[in-house]
Length: 398
Image (cartoon, rainbow, N blue to C red; front, side, top):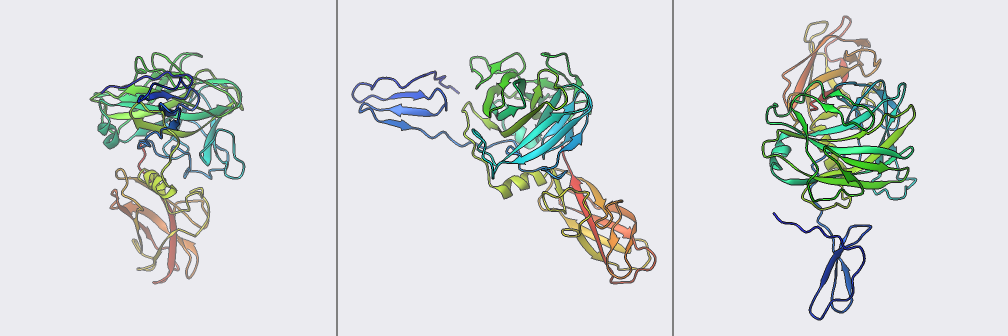
C-alpha cells in the first residue's frame, strides 16, 4: 500500500491550464483541490468504521453517569465508562460523564465526554480499551490511526498509545497484572505479561502530538484539541488495546477529559462521525448489560425494568424461576449478578405480590451468551401465583 504525506501549508497559486493542485489544509487537515480556474473544492474525507466502542462516552452503565464515582485498581483494570477501564498508580480515581448538549463547548462535536480525576494521593492515571479478538484479527498487518479529543484541568502532557496482546498470549484474555510498574514522571509504564507497545509508524508525523519510542506525547491544555497517531498492527496480534495516560503524576483534583475516540483502518485523520445511539448501546451491551434503564446505577432500589416471575411452588426450593434473554448476543458467557429491587441490600429476588418478603437461595443456571436462568427458594408465607421481581447485570468484559 502506498500513501502521500501532504504538507501543503497554504493554498498554492492557480495551476496551469488543464491542471489541478491538490493539498491539505494546515489547520483542519481537510484535503482540497484547486483547479485551473481558481475554484477551490474541499474534499470530504471517508468516514471509516470506528473499531472502538463508546468512543463518544455516551454510556457508563456501572454507575449513575453524571455522578462523580470513585474507582481504584493499582495493577489491573476497573471499568468506568463502558469499554473504558482505569488503572491508577495509587488510590484513587474518579469518573464522571458530562452532557454538553445544553452548554456547547468550543471545539467539541460529541454530546458527551468523560472526565478522570485523581484524588487522595498524587499519582498517574491510565485509561484503556481492549478490542475484541474477532475485530483485532481483521486488522492484522494493517496501518491504523488512533485519535482522541482531550482537554485537562491545566496544561498537562498526556500520552496515547496502541498496544497488542502478543502471539504468546491467549486471545481475549488480558493478564491480571495489566501494569506491573508505572515508572517515574516522564517514563512509560511497564506492561503486563505478553503486552507490548506498538511503535509509532516511521515517517508519519503525529497529529498535534510528538511520536516517541512507544507512544505519542500530547500537550493538552484547558481547550479541546484533537490528537492522534498511526501504527502498524502485527500480523500475529491477538488483541489490540488503546491507552491514554498521564505522563507525570497528577495531584489531587487534577483531571483530564476525553471523547471522540476512534481507531480506524488507514492513515486518514477522521472527522467525528459517530454511529447512532442505539447501535453504540448494542456494541456496549455485548460486553455489559443490565435490566435497569441505561443511565440508572445498577444498585438502585427500583422496580421498573426488573425481571418478573410468579411463585410456582410455595415455600419450596426452586419455587421461583426467571429467564433473562439478553438484549444482544454477548461476547461470551457473562457473570450474572442479581440485585434486590426493593431493598437493594442483597442479591435476593423480592416477592412483591401477596406477603412481601425476600426470596432465598438465589442462584444462576444455564448461562450462555444469549440468556441466563435465575432461581430462588420461595420464602415462608408465599402462595402460588405471587409476583416476584429481581434486577440483574451481566458482565462479559475483557
